[in-house]
Every structure is written in structure tokens, then in C-alpha cells.
Length: 277
Image 1 (cartoon, rainbow, N blue to C red):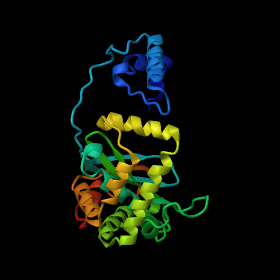
Image 2 (image 1 turned 90 degrees about the vertical axis):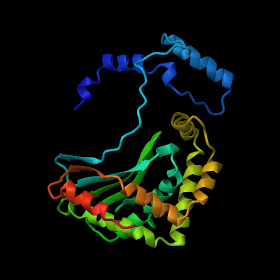
Image 3 (image 1 turned 180 degrees about the vertical axis):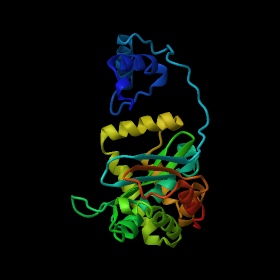
Image 4 (image 1 turned 90 degrees about the horizontal axis):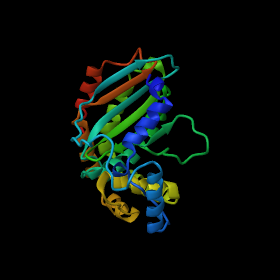
């Protein structure tokens, strides 16, 4: 809907006003620091900026305020797309970062059909207890996203339209079943997370993005070894506690596509408010 506003003039204006040195974090991997500074300064000089000059609109930092709620968009689509989200208080700099990331890996998920062979989360709860048991669920995936002072734990699913009113009940039961997590499942989730971290950092582009993100979010860069130790220290009770904390917030709900059968928000919110973990 906003595409008509994406004109060359508007894009150039946005870059000139917002992409100023005081608003950017520059990251380099395996490059001499002085050399990086020289080329960074030259790049901004060519755009008419000084590295010591501030620009753009004044930065206003306000605490994140989570509200929950819903958005529904009925569109011609063969599937019903559903997203459920809950707040992770504190976000990147809070106490729940490692726990919620392990919980995300434990929930896991994927698609009902996936090429490339097995081994892509097929032992996670959303796979074994949703995709393997409900033919109408086309895909189901847990995710988390962290900001400076808040974050989200989300579950995205695509289902056959005639079953759009069933998924929230299935997901609520999945949450209630987290308390039955076995030691093997917990260790599998932790190992999968550690493997993902180390594998991603083998790619220089991913490493640079990770360093930049950490600097923006916390002002420091932690190592993979530090995060690995945090993951190793996570217990089953930590996962149950972070899930309880998340479920205290009102659910954020998005429905897109063929959504005629999707239940009212009040019904969905009430069901998740009664989940006992």
C-alpha cells in the first residue's frame, strides 16, 4: 500500500536525513582498524558528511510498550496464515534471552513437506505434536526476535482454511505440554542452538551482521563461547518460567488470507490466558 511513496526522490531524501554517521554502526571482520576508518570517513565525505557531524531528526528513545491485539486481512489465498506472539520482557538485555531462545528451539517446527532430506527440526514439539498429527496444518514454526528492551516469542502457522478455528487450541495444548519435556528433549534443543550459533559464525557476512546487531542492542560484542555457557546453564524450570512470563502478556494475533473460520480475538486470548504451565 505504501509502494507509491517509494520514489527515487523520497528514498534519496530518507538516506540523506537518516543515514548519517551518528546513526550508523560500522563493522569489519579481518580488516585493519585504521584502514576501515579511512575508507569509512572517505565514504561519508563523498556524501557530504563529517564523521563528527550529527544529522537527521533528533533521536527519541522511549521504553517499548507492548499492547497485544490483532490484525486481520482477508485476501484471496489457498491457505489461512496465523501468527501468535507474546512479549519477552527485557529483550536482548533482559534475563530471558538464553531461556527464550532455547524454548524456541525446543518448540521448533517446520513444514509438512520439505525437500533436502530429514534432520531439520523433525524431533521438535511443533513437528511431532502438530505437523505429524494434524493433516490440516501445512506449516508451523516458532521464532523469537529481540530488541533493546523488549522482544517477542512467536508461532507462525499455515492451515487449511476450514480449520482456521482450531489451531489456537492445538497451540495452547502444546504450551501446556512443555512441562512434560524430557532431559533428552532439553539437551537436543540446547545442542541444536549451539550448533546453529557456531555454524552461522563460520560465514563472514553473518559474523559482521551479528557483531553490528550486538553493538546496536547492547553496546558490546559477546563471543559464541559466552553465549554457549549461558545456554548450557539453562534448565527445564527456566523454560517453564519464561513461558509463564510470556503468557502473562496479551497475545498479539495476525490472520491473513482465507480467514473466514478464524475464531474471535477474545476467544483466542481467553484460551491462552488459561494455559497452565
